[in-house]
Amino acid sequence: MPQTRIPAAWMRGGTSKGVFFLARDLPADPAERDALLVRLLGSPDPYGKQIDGLGGATSSTSKVVIVAPSSEADCDVDYLFGQVLVDRAHIDWSGNCGNLTAAVGPFALWRKLLPAPASGEVSVRLWQRNIGKRIHARVPVHDGEPLEGGKFVLDGVAFAAAPITLTFLDPGGAAGGGILPTGKPVDTLTLDDGSTLDASLVSAGNPMVFVSAHALGMDCTASQAQLNTDTALRERCEQIRIAGALVMGLADSAEAAAARQHTPKVAIVAPPADCISVDGKRFAASDLDLLTRVLSMGLFHHAIPGTAAIAIAAAAGVPGSLVSRQLPHDPPGPLRIGHPSGRSEVGATTCTRQGQWLLEAAVLRRSARMLMDGWVCLPG
Image 1 (spheres, rainbow, N blue to C red):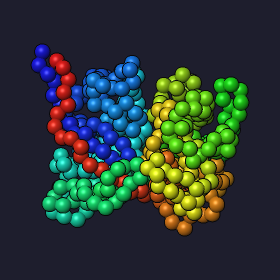
Image 2: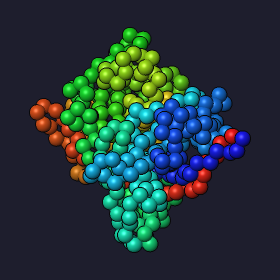
Image 3: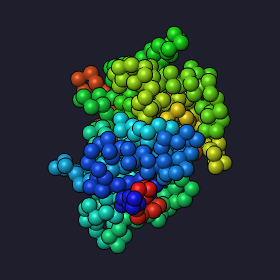
């Protein structure tokens, strides 16, 4: 049988990588589409490496994005994000990827889904289909194409690039935009072993469960490699994630919550402290507003998911939340978040309306680059 070839691009967006497709190049039937995509990325792989596919065998590199002209009157592009599981033939479509969002605008420009000026900056209005939210991406261009080279340094990415500014509009929860699903800044979770733990449950960018490092007896300056060797800690964090999903109403059983691996994520937070990033960069406590370590797909993330940064900034604006309690003072500017690869900054505007905490907008800067353009191939 002849080889199957599908037009695609391999893109880096922020600290993630994924395979990007135009919707018209994929099967219209969701089940047929998903089966094709998991095979293209090399899942399921009992060896955990995705050797026979394009996936990178980590939560940051086993991803797909499907892009199309927008069906929304005030948007240019629709996109759907999928987290491809490594060990199962399954794609989790339950949430967005804030890092890969940075690559959607450039991909749309490369594919000529909208015009670009000869030079300057173009605003690409995105409709995020997973969560039904609007995002504006300001993409620099040169000679009518996305500009990739530049001096912007993103901790967690080895090379400098041109900055892309992302503005997430009303990225809070779906019903009325409230960012506290239970209406409370702190909830008490009951874990499956009968123990209890305080957590802040936040829906902004993606659903998140925040717990304090102190409550877990954890060092929030530890490296990703150190934390991922602590099996007991990771198992407890998965219990916390499942309990949070149930309280937030994201799943109706522990089994369903366990299967929904992409969301919610768990973030462990602590006050700022002197620390060293994985590349040897030293940060003083005064360089940061708080520390975090985020789990993604059962492992500690090497940097910080973009949507997690948004949720942290949202929670920081809510008095009494476990995030705001870590802050030594109100940040005068964007929130400076320390993570294993360095520091990330995000700006957020929160307010209250009719007793609900809302996130009006969140702004962060990322970069993106096309790594490969051509066809992905499957055996006949």
